[in-house]
Amino acid sequence: MRITSFNANGLRSAASKGFFDWFRGQDVDVLAVQETKAQEHQLAGPEFLPDGYKAWFRDATTKKGYSGVAIYSKREPDEIRTALGWDAFDEEGRYIEARFGNLSVVSFYIPSGSSGELRQGFKFEVMEWLRPILDQWLASGRDFVLCGDWNIVRSELDIRNWKSNQKNSGCLPPEREWLNGLCFDTHGWVDTYRALNPEGQDYTWWSNRGAARAKNVGWRIDYQFVTPSLRERLRGCSIAPTPRFSDHAPYTVDYAL
Image (cartoon, rainbow, N blue to C red; front, side):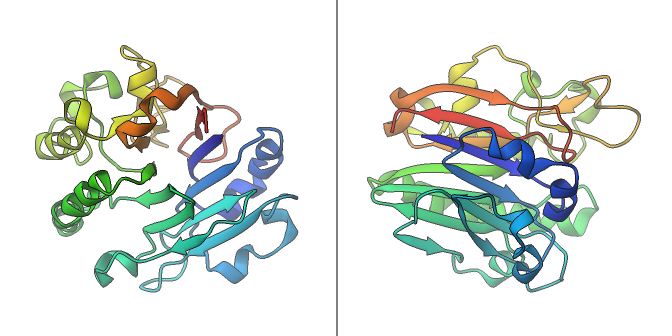
């Protein structure tokens, strides 16, 4: 089974840059999208739905053209979920889950705090609120694949300019402590990229400023975290920085499922 996570930074924009043309050649079973930045009716055309796929969306209701997540799948899910029970998070269009038997594929878009103290405070609230939910999922006996843009790096391996970003959102010590705390020993969530590339230094996001992409001054903030039950099912992964469809790169993982 091949699963791709992709922050589109506007799915209509990514489509205009050839994303779905590229996607058709990737043989992906499930695509988890973040930042659709559209309402569902704006993504209803055939140019947004490759043959053989169906799509499900969770739009932001707080502000049109903001946030939004989606799941594209070859196989019809048994169930789609789009709310976790906290309106402040749910109504920004930050979670959608597709259930296939005992497997759940989630598309998450964790808030960024880079715009200022107010949003950073909300990000910390989300982290605190989300932790028991993620713990519950771990203990549920279901197989989970948590795709998405988490807006946090885990370590020095995941960001080019480590020292200069210690006081910037996405690299703050409390954020990293929280994310790494989810991946504790053999009983926590498994970071698929790090499990397959223990010393890898690849990135999934680059600022649009200062030729960051050309210089590969990036951050690894897009993940697929899985339950320990799937660790032995990992077969490979890839990040596709080119062609450029967004400020993020698609991240794909192959599973023996």
